[in-house]
Length: 60
Image (cartoon, rainbow, N blue to C red; front, side, top):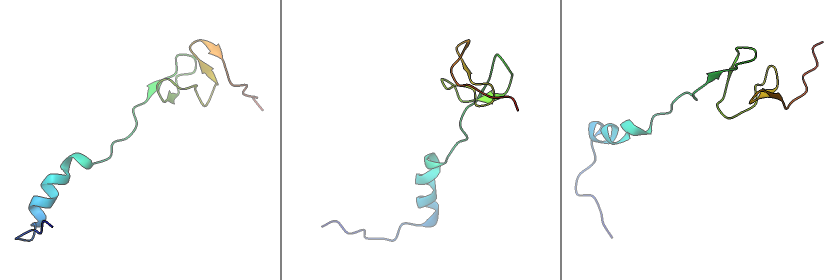
């Protein structure tokens, strides 16, 4: 069984983890209402996707 000969330093450990950071999801603006939405998803505010209404939104 492989056993490390020396303790991995905090610097070495943190350099290895630099690529594991999280990023915010990318958003695009809706062409109908201008609100931010996820790409390839229906707009949560107006319910449109690719120029057609796919989710009924009742304006109360």
